[in-house]
Image 1 (spheres, rainbow, N blue to C red):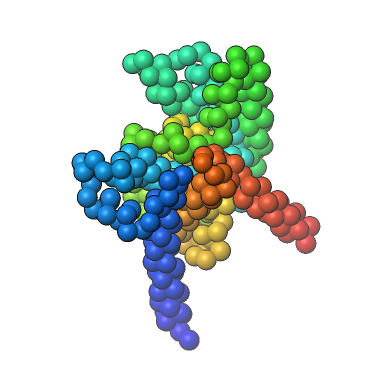
Image 2: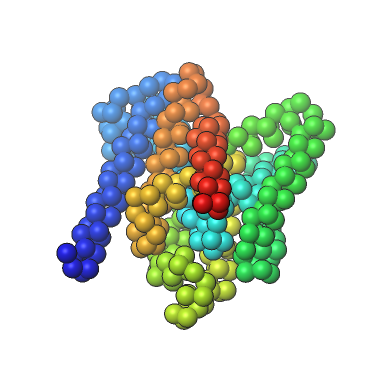
Length: 344
């Protein structure tokens, strides 16, 4: 078999996998819309979607005011965290790098906890002040991690710096929670779990805008990103501006993480698990891996949303708990594989 034919067959296989991913996202989104305390059949969901929010029926209110913002937020947050995790792994060259392991998510959690404790509001709205504080801390810590790691070419120093940041901000958040009143401590605790019940059309729009803009830019740089994964020296020899690419990719990742967690809270391990699952089926070619990671992250988040509703009757379990239950054993497997490869 010639190399050209083999390449075409492989490309068709990857396109079929991406098409299957689109179908999977649609099916999981419908399942999420159907799942809830009141329950709803597929026909009723589709009818409510087609009729629009103006009809005023009970089904339309449930779908358009409650469930659809949660479903779309889950889709875009999952996609954003997966894209961010993939880029962090690309620029650090470390399979264990993710928004959670680098401490960016915990920094956002501390920012939100500080805003809640201080009663920081914008235009009288506490949720907006909390979102801005979480966003700001995520951006600041991302810049700090890049500066600390970038001094050595984004070596494992970046991962170590992220771990330090993670524990530091977790300790600060626990300090605030310990000294807060019971009511404030409960608000802080609820925010740190990652709860889709806080989803609004505002959170949907913020996450969607970040994902669409980031995906458009990164797909346009897919060749350069693929070259970077082969090795820094090879990328430089091919004329890839490695330093600038890393700065831009890390900045985009920080923006995606901040827009994701600043409204619904911290969601762990999606940025670690989803890119690896996409790599297992699509390989390292960023032309396919970027959309594949986006779809995988969205599917993982939607599946976690469905599971969160089913596991807690009459209430919605925080989705961050479900993603952590999936991510912890996955991280353990990656650690064991990395250790075996090192000493093989």
